[in-house]
Image 1 (cartoon, rainbow, N blue to C red):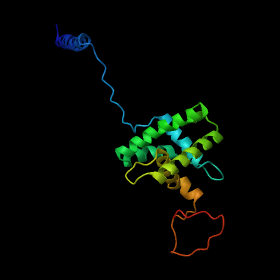
Image 2 (image 1 turned 30 degrees about the vertical axis):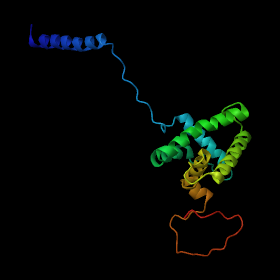
Image 3 (image 1 turned 135 degrees about the horizontal axis):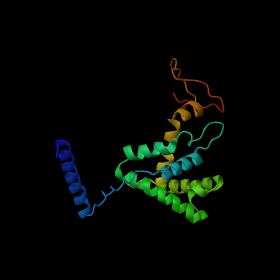
Image 4 (image 1 turned 180 degrees about the vertical axis):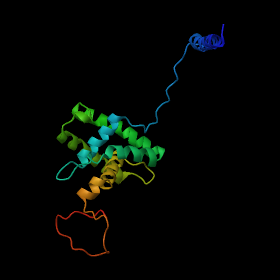
Length: 189
């Protein structure tokens, strides 16, 4: 036997031992780690985009879905909210689905635009009543969090700042008093 054959034989023996031992011990697959509550799925981000689009729809300017507000909400909830508000927001996604099922017998994504608007209008009324009665230490209503993130995400996006608001990339001098004409857009800068 030459050296090449000996090395090949040793490799087969060692490799067989390693593979064989795995089979004898049952070869359990690695356990999957439980995803964090804020590890939103693509469906949940699409749902958040639909909620945002219902709040800020496409008109003569692109709406919230075009600004990818759902993805913005995911980042803000994951990176900026404390655990209490994260839980409220995540539970709110489920509560939104439950409210949709209760009112219309189908999920939010299957509603027509008028039904979505009707449902969100009711949730907005509910959160305003809750906010009016809550104590300072009480947690916020989930729909208030969704609505606030929609507005923040949209108006700080490129689409919101440059197309829905007036935007001057390099503003000139400060003018503290500029006459407002009815119908003028607000300033982004």
